Image (cartoon, rainbow, N blue to C red):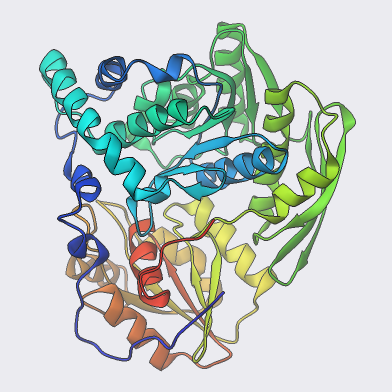
Length: 453
């Protein structure tokens, strides 16, 4: 993908969120849980007020730590290419809230979502009265997606969970197939050990249904098996029941040989970079086969589905007309950063690297930087225009205390200008640490145009 010359100005510009604060859909993003407990009770009440669309939707539910959005996108693309009307809901969005609700690989039109908004707002008011708690943005937008999917009569709703599993707001869906991407120790609010976190996330599996899982660390694998047994469900595991047989990096992606269920085989091009995306594709193929109940699927359709996948902000390479390439990746935990590092070394092999880093909350940035030290990057810290972003001076001070001396940019636009000026044309700019940061930088590089299909 190419883009125009990055502005060389250092003055801050209005962020996408600031520009759109009067948009009714963007105003939903201000709805926050606060101190209310996690759980499905608010979502259940809201969906009940909307007619319980989740009860009638054929659903694939995707949870995990890393790779959820990519897996959802690949599943939906495969289904669409096979002739099924696929709806998908993912989070977070990068540039526009409409990215979260897609049908047939295309965001649902803003006008259509706005037409649903009065009914959604009335349902929110009734639900909040009943539970005496505030419905969150994630709950509101996910419920809206389910309502739209039923109205549009999708053949499959592919639903991404939030950070949780059993107690995640999305877990009111009744999925015939559930998927777990790789689970790590990132979401410690779900438990103090990998076993506890995996147990919580595996809780999305419905009794008697099928759970398809990526390759997992032994502790997580044991927890998942325990939940599946308890629920009387079936378990299909990467490396045992399906997997990646071959992969060859090529410009703009990779050629894959995937072993599907029952020994089926698919060879095709995936326009995503990195071994982790090959693994996500294998999981997605198995999920589609299980959901449709057959491995006898049109190979040409499957190849077309793989080739059509787009996942902005995940090892996405944007090449401006002038200056170095820019890699956008929302990696915010060690596993994701390691995947990013491997993909960059494999596909790009830059002469030098400038890193633009922003984080959220109390996340310690030093382990992320330690992983990236092999690229010997110079580091610029900044912050996205979201309430959860780590203030840039606080982030810079954390790194100084760890013996690093980063450059400081007051916003992502300034950071990008600084990075472009100090990076040689054969070098690379990497933007990472937060999907919110990635979204804001992407808006600068693409003149505000949101991610395509």
